[in-house]
Length: 188
Image (tube, helix red, strand yellow):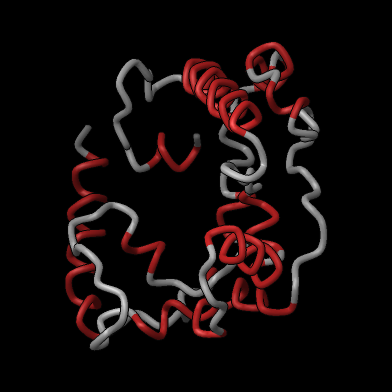
């Protein structure tokens, strides 16, 4: 929800000025999706926990690709090396999440939300988002302990410093886009 709110990703019916509203409505959406997944069964739907995908990307991605019947490639762990290359990954420069996708796998987003949710919302979290408990999350941990990451995630320290590899074809655009976004945010 934090990413959706901070990037101002509009979703019908969600009040982006309210973590309480977004968490409540997001909880309802997850409840429906999870119930549908359980109903169709494990042969047709594979629940994937984002945190586990980020902490243990090779294991998680191998499970996902196996589920989809796709052959594993080590290049999957280094998608950032294929961005903008022939036969590689193409990105839209105006897509709001491009600046995140160009980074190597890292843990930045796991705790970026901490400190942004009001105390009353955190206190009521078990009622606002009961799916957290059903999916075995601690509703009151701030920040939560998601576990220890695999060694591939050692990218986080230099991503946070801004030393990640931005493809040359996106460098100028991303800087201009971030400045434009910052100035729009400052004037709102």
